[in-house]
Amino acid sequence: MSGPILYIHGFNSAPSSKKATQLIEVMERLGLSDQLRVPALHHHPREAIGQLNNAIEALGRPLLVGSSLGGYYATHLAERHGLKALLINPAVSPHRMFDGFLGTQKNLYTDEAWELTHDHVAALAELEVPAPQDPQRYQVWLQTGDETLDYRLAQQYYRACALRIQAGGDHSFQGFAAQLPAMLSFAGIGADLYQVIDFTAL
Image (cartoon, rainbow, N blue to C red; front, side, top):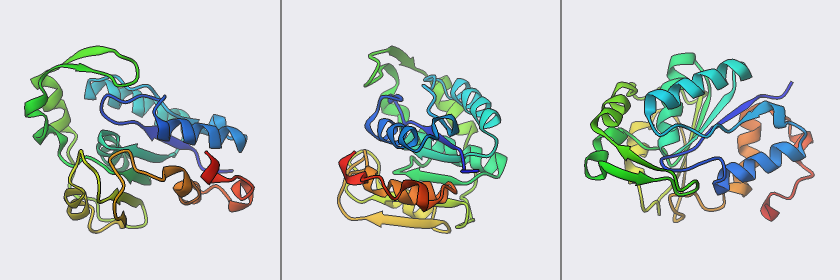
């Protein structure tokens, strides 16, 4: 039985983002679509966490894959449920960064407009957990060229975890598709299943 995966997109993102669609395509080609969930998250953290808890319940014990703000959610959920997490350019203490962003927001993929309020920020603060200490359960993928988040904040916060830091890149994590075999392996999916896929062609 291969390991299920729950993909958690970032702030103002969606299941139609590039990383999400690449992962969906690979799982479809492996015949493992039923082992993957990529929920379209509500903009309010409390709603989003509720959606993610439901997805965890449906999947069993999935690998949590979180990008940006999704990495913050994944860390909270991994600590709460004792799950493994793979974090891609994760946000650290995002509630401390949102002061200048209060007001109208727009989802980059759905064009949905919504209001970022102090309640959103307070809800994010409620999800903060102590820095994870388990390198067996956490992989953290960082690119130093991240223009949105300072990778050094995550490098420091997750210093006890398994860090993979690449020079250059950007916030979307360049070359993500080529790294998918490492993610599948971490999820417990056997290499014999995916070695026929050309990940560079995704």
